[in-house]
Image (cartoon, rainbow, N blue to C red; front, side, top):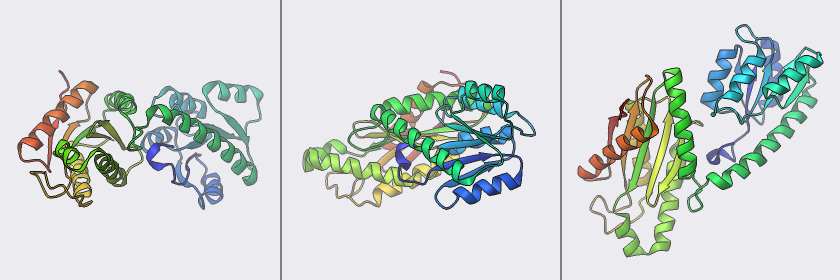
Length: 310
C-alpha cells in the first residue's frame, strides 16, 4: 500500500477468464476491498501498473498468456514486483506449484475455491505486505509532511520513464514551490513555516486522484508530483487543481507579492508517448517551467515538453 492510501480499503486484482469465478471472488471481497478484474493476461499486466493493487489472485489458464508468464512479467517490472500474487488454479500438480513459486507467487489456492479459505489466505498476505510496506516507508517518507521523500521520487521516476519508453506511454512531472516562503518563515517563525508546509502537503495529497500518481517533498519548500500515463495538457489541468487547492487553504501571508495567502507556483513538464529522455531531462524541463511561472508573477502554472535528448 502506498503512503497516501494507507487508510483505504485493500485493492485486489482478480485475473480469471471465467465470469463465474470472477463473480464468486468479487462477492467474497467487494464489501471490504476495492476489487478490479481482468480476463486476459495482457489486460492484467496493464491493470497492475495502472491500479497498483495490494494483491493479485491469478488463474493459470488464460486465453492469451499462461498465468506463470503473467507472474514472471509482474515480478520483472519495478512497478509491480512487490505485489504479492496468489495463484488460483484447478491444477493439483506439484511441478506446477513449484514453477509458480519459482516465478514469484507467494501462495497457491486450488479450485473449487472455499471462500473462507481464500479470505484467510488473502488476509494473511495483505498483513505481510502491509508490514513490508511500513518498513519500506521508513526509508522513503519525509518526516515533516508524511509525503514521499526525494529518494522515493527519484526511484519511481526512473522506473516510470523506462516503463513509458518501453510501452510508448506519456508521462508528466510537476515541480511546485511555495511562493515567498522565506518571507513567511521570517515573519511567522519556523514552527509556523513547518505547519504551513504540512498543510500544503495535505492539500496536494488530497488532490491526487489516481493511485499511481505520486506527491513528494522535493526539498525545503519545494514539492513534486509524478503523473504516469498523463499528457502535458492533462498534467496542466492537474497542476491547476493543486494550485487552487493550496490557495483555498487561505493561510495568511502578509509578506507575499503574489497574494494575501500562501500560494504555489508550478512548473509542468510532459513527455509524449515515444521513447527517449532521462529523469534529469524531466526535472530540468519542470524547473524551466517553474522559473517561467515565477517570472510571470507566481501563483500560476506553466508547462513545457520533456525533451527526448539532452
